[in-house]
Image (cartoon, rainbow, N blue to C red):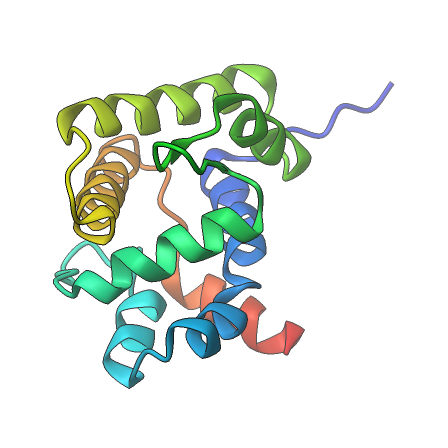
Amino acid sequence: MLIIVNSSAEVMKKLSITFAKEVDVCQKELNVGDNIMQEMQNFWREEYDLVHRDTGCMILCMASKHNLLVIADEKIHHQNAHEFAKAHGADDEMATQLVNILHDCEKQYPPQDDVCLRSLAVAKCFRTKIHSLKWAPSMEELLAEIMTEM
């Protein structure tokens, strides 16, 4: 029996590519400019500072398109997020760890009036934790794969 094990960075690349498939739809819906698209393209670059509120809005929009949010409180839908991760190569343990990281980041940033700013803060927290685990996908590979799928 052949068992294929994906590296964590490879899984994160697959997750990112699928997640980003909604970027054009959300860009049109939210009418965001090139500066936000630049932030989205550079999301995994550790040295790149995510600063725009609208980036948080884009992340919320894309998450909602993938049914990853509990809309009532703008929090991650744990079961759907777990299934999303597993559908893109994560094993049960990694999927659980990803959901736990997101949940921990959400707890650090309690709900506030501006859901986009909170989403941006949670996303930055998530990115930092993924980098600390050395799971962040290579931006060069990620962009090359996204370009070939267009």
